Image 1 (tube, rainbow, N blue to C red):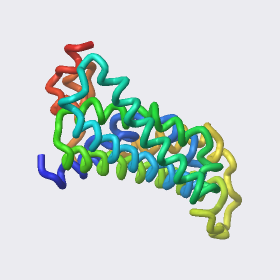
Image 2 (image 1 turned 180 degrees about the horizontal axis):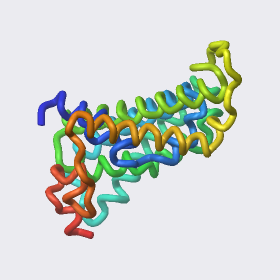
Image 3 (image 1 turned 30 degrees about the horizontal axis):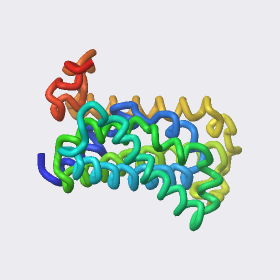
Length: 222
Protein backbone atom coordinates (compact mmCIF):
# COMPACT_ATOMS: atom_id res chain seq x y z
CA UNK A 1 0.00 0.00 0.00
CA UNK A 2 1.32 3.48 -0.90
CA UNK A 3 1.98 6.17 1.71
CA UNK A 4 -1.07 8.13 0.57
CA UNK A 5 -3.13 4.94 0.56
CA UNK A 6 -2.27 4.31 4.22
CA UNK A 7 -3.59 7.76 5.17
CA UNK A 8 -6.73 7.53 3.01
CA UNK A 9 -7.44 4.06 4.34
CA UNK A 10 -8.27 5.45 7.79
CA UNK A 11 -10.46 8.19 6.35
CA UNK A 12 -12.53 5.96 4.10
CA UNK A 13 -12.22 2.18 3.84
CA UNK A 14 -11.34 1.61 7.50
CA UNK A 15 -12.87 4.70 9.09
CA UNK A 16 -12.65 3.73 12.77
CA UNK A 17 -16.06 5.08 13.79
CA UNK A 18 -18.25 4.51 10.73
CA UNK A 19 -16.66 1.37 9.27
CA UNK A 20 -14.97 -0.46 12.15
CA UNK A 21 -17.43 0.89 14.74
CA UNK A 22 -14.69 1.59 17.30
CA UNK A 23 -14.53 4.42 19.82
CA UNK A 24 -18.31 4.79 19.90
CA UNK A 25 -18.36 5.96 23.54
CA UNK A 26 -16.60 9.32 22.92
CA UNK A 27 -18.24 9.50 19.49
CA UNK A 28 -21.68 9.62 21.09
CA UNK A 29 -20.75 11.43 24.30
CA UNK A 30 -18.76 14.48 23.24
CA UNK A 31 -20.42 15.39 19.93
CA UNK A 32 -23.12 17.65 21.35
CA UNK A 33 -20.89 20.48 20.07
CA UNK A 34 -18.74 20.56 16.93
CA UNK A 35 -15.83 22.09 18.88
CA UNK A 36 -15.87 19.22 21.36
CA UNK A 37 -15.74 16.75 18.48
CA UNK A 38 -12.79 18.58 16.94
CA UNK A 39 -10.94 18.67 20.26
CA UNK A 40 -11.47 14.98 20.97
CA UNK A 41 -10.56 14.00 17.41
CA UNK A 42 -7.31 15.97 17.39
CA UNK A 43 -6.42 14.64 20.84
CA UNK A 44 -6.91 11.06 19.68
CA UNK A 45 -4.90 11.81 16.52
CA UNK A 46 -1.95 13.05 18.59
CA UNK A 47 -1.95 9.89 20.69
CA UNK A 48 -2.42 7.65 17.65
CA UNK A 49 0.59 9.10 15.85
CA UNK A 50 2.92 9.22 18.88
CA UNK A 51 2.00 5.80 20.26
CA UNK A 52 2.12 4.20 16.81
CA UNK A 53 5.62 5.50 16.15
CA UNK A 54 6.83 4.41 19.60
CA UNK A 55 5.33 0.91 19.34
CA UNK A 56 6.84 0.53 15.88
CA UNK A 57 10.28 1.62 17.10
CA UNK A 58 10.16 -0.85 20.02
CA UNK A 59 8.36 -3.72 18.26
CA UNK A 60 11.46 -5.92 18.15
CA UNK A 61 12.32 -5.22 21.78
CA UNK A 62 8.96 -5.74 23.51
CA UNK A 63 8.44 -9.44 24.46
CA UNK A 64 5.35 -10.94 22.88
CA UNK A 65 3.90 -12.07 26.23
CA UNK A 66 3.75 -8.54 27.63
CA UNK A 67 3.04 -6.62 24.45
CA UNK A 68 -0.46 -5.45 25.44
CA UNK A 69 0.57 -4.09 28.88
CA UNK A 70 3.53 -2.42 27.16
CA UNK A 71 1.26 -0.84 24.54
CA UNK A 72 -1.11 0.45 27.22
CA UNK A 73 1.81 1.94 29.16
CA UNK A 74 3.06 3.71 26.03
CA UNK A 75 -0.42 5.02 25.22
CA UNK A 76 -0.97 6.16 28.83
CA UNK A 77 2.30 8.10 28.73
CA UNK A 78 1.23 10.15 25.72
CA UNK A 79 -2.29 10.64 27.11
CA UNK A 80 -0.75 12.03 30.32
CA UNK A 81 1.36 14.47 28.28
CA UNK A 82 -1.73 15.43 26.28
CA UNK A 83 -3.80 16.01 29.43
CA UNK A 84 -1.15 18.30 30.94
CA UNK A 85 -0.95 20.34 27.73
CA UNK A 86 -4.74 20.66 27.42
CA UNK A 87 -5.13 21.62 31.09
CA UNK A 88 -2.41 24.24 30.75
CA UNK A 89 -3.36 25.84 27.44
CA UNK A 90 -7.00 24.82 26.72
CA UNK A 91 -8.80 24.69 30.09
CA UNK A 92 -12.23 25.20 28.52
CA UNK A 93 -11.72 22.19 26.25
CA UNK A 94 -10.49 20.18 29.22
CA UNK A 95 -13.70 20.99 31.10
CA UNK A 96 -15.85 20.15 28.08
CA UNK A 97 -14.26 16.76 27.41
CA UNK A 98 -14.10 15.86 31.09
CA UNK A 99 -13.43 12.19 31.83
CA UNK A 100 -13.32 11.26 28.13
CA UNK A 101 -9.87 12.81 27.75
CA UNK A 102 -8.09 10.40 30.14
CA UNK A 103 -10.24 7.56 28.78
CA UNK A 104 -8.30 7.85 25.51
CA UNK A 105 -5.94 5.38 27.22
CA UNK A 106 -8.46 2.58 26.72
CA UNK A 107 -9.80 3.76 23.38
CA UNK A 108 -10.14 0.66 21.17
CA UNK A 109 -8.95 2.55 18.09
CA UNK A 110 -5.54 3.38 19.57
CA UNK A 111 -4.82 0.02 21.17
CA UNK A 112 -6.16 -1.74 18.07
CA UNK A 113 -3.85 0.13 15.67
CA UNK A 114 -0.87 -0.50 17.95
CA UNK A 115 -1.59 -4.23 17.85
CA UNK A 116 -2.76 -4.55 14.24
CA UNK A 117 -0.48 -2.11 12.41
CA UNK A 118 2.30 -0.40 14.38
CA UNK A 119 3.67 -3.66 15.80
CA UNK A 120 4.12 -5.01 12.26
CA UNK A 121 5.24 -1.97 10.25
CA UNK A 122 7.92 0.73 10.14
CA UNK A 123 7.90 4.03 11.99
CA UNK A 124 6.89 6.20 9.00
CA UNK A 125 4.06 3.91 7.93
CA UNK A 126 2.84 3.71 11.54
CA UNK A 127 2.81 7.50 11.79
CA UNK A 128 0.84 7.75 8.55
CA UNK A 129 -1.59 5.07 9.74
CA UNK A 130 -2.13 7.02 12.97
CA UNK A 131 -2.66 10.21 10.98
CA UNK A 132 -5.19 8.57 8.67
CA UNK A 133 -7.12 6.90 11.49
CA UNK A 134 -7.04 10.12 13.49
CA UNK A 135 -8.31 12.21 10.59
CA UNK A 136 -11.09 9.71 9.89
CA UNK A 137 -12.11 9.77 13.54
CA UNK A 138 -11.89 13.56 13.72
CA UNK A 139 -13.97 14.11 10.58
CA UNK A 140 -16.66 11.79 11.92
CA UNK A 141 -16.78 13.58 15.28
CA UNK A 142 -16.86 17.04 13.71
CA UNK A 143 -19.60 16.00 11.27
CA UNK A 144 -21.69 14.48 14.05
CA UNK A 145 -21.06 17.45 16.32
CA UNK A 146 -21.99 19.92 13.60
CA UNK A 147 -25.26 18.15 12.80
CA UNK A 148 -26.24 17.77 16.46
CA UNK A 149 -25.27 21.33 17.38
CA UNK A 150 -27.04 22.80 14.36
CA UNK A 151 -30.29 20.91 14.89
CA UNK A 152 -30.19 20.92 18.68
CA UNK A 153 -28.89 24.43 19.42
CA UNK A 154 -29.17 26.34 16.14
CA UNK A 155 -25.44 27.04 15.99
CA UNK A 156 -22.15 25.65 14.65
CA UNK A 157 -18.86 26.05 16.53
CA UNK A 158 -20.71 28.36 18.91
CA UNK A 159 -21.87 30.71 16.14
CA UNK A 160 -25.64 31.30 16.30
CA UNK A 161 -27.07 30.92 12.79
CA UNK A 162 -30.53 32.37 13.61
CA UNK A 163 -32.40 29.54 11.93
CA UNK A 164 -36.08 30.13 11.04
CA UNK A 165 -37.10 27.07 13.06
CA UNK A 166 -36.79 26.31 16.75
CA UNK A 167 -33.87 24.03 17.76
CA UNK A 168 -34.82 20.42 18.49
CA UNK A 169 -33.34 19.67 21.93
CA UNK A 170 -33.54 15.93 21.26
CA UNK A 171 -30.42 16.11 19.07
CA UNK A 172 -28.18 17.10 21.98
CA UNK A 173 -29.45 14.21 24.11
CA UNK A 174 -28.06 10.63 24.01
CA UNK A 175 -31.02 9.57 21.85
CA UNK A 176 -30.11 12.23 19.30
CA UNK A 177 -26.52 11.01 19.29
CA UNK A 178 -27.57 7.46 18.48
CA UNK A 179 -29.94 8.73 15.77
CA UNK A 180 -27.31 10.86 14.00
CA UNK A 181 -24.69 8.11 14.32
CA UNK A 182 -27.05 5.55 12.80
CA UNK A 183 -27.99 7.88 9.95
CA UNK A 184 -24.32 8.54 9.14
CA UNK A 185 -23.60 4.81 9.06
CA UNK A 186 -26.61 4.30 6.80
CA UNK A 187 -25.30 7.07 4.52
CA UNK A 188 -21.93 5.29 4.27
CA UNK A 189 -23.69 2.03 3.31
CA UNK A 190 -25.78 3.88 0.70
CA UNK A 191 -22.69 5.51 -0.84
CA UNK A 192 -20.94 2.11 -0.98
CA UNK A 193 -23.91 0.50 -2.72
CA UNK A 194 -24.27 3.41 -5.15
CA UNK A 195 -20.60 3.09 -6.13
CA UNK A 196 -20.74 -0.70 -6.29
CA UNK A 197 -18.26 -1.04 -3.42
CA UNK A 198 -20.56 -2.60 -0.84
CA UNK A 199 -19.13 -5.77 0.72
CA UNK A 200 -21.23 -8.08 2.87
CA UNK A 201 -19.69 -8.24 6.34
CA UNK A 202 -19.14 -11.78 7.61
CA UNK A 203 -18.11 -13.19 10.96
CA UNK A 204 -14.38 -13.87 11.36
CA UNK A 205 -11.38 -12.71 9.37
CA UNK A 206 -13.20 -12.87 6.05
CA UNK A 207 -15.41 -9.98 7.07
CA UNK A 208 -12.77 -7.93 8.89
CA UNK A 209 -11.49 -4.80 7.06
CA UNK A 210 -8.10 -5.28 8.74
CA UNK A 211 -7.67 -8.91 7.66
CA UNK A 212 -5.11 -7.89 5.06
CA UNK A 213 -2.80 -6.57 7.77
CA UNK A 214 -2.64 -9.54 10.10
CA UNK A 215 -3.44 -12.29 7.52
CA UNK A 216 -5.75 -14.00 10.00
CA UNK A 217 -3.06 -14.43 12.66
CA UNK A 218 -5.03 -12.57 15.31
CA UNK A 219 -8.00 -14.90 14.86
CA UNK A 220 -5.68 -17.87 15.21
CA UNK A 221 -4.46 -16.48 18.55
CA UNK A 222 -8.03 -16.15 19.77
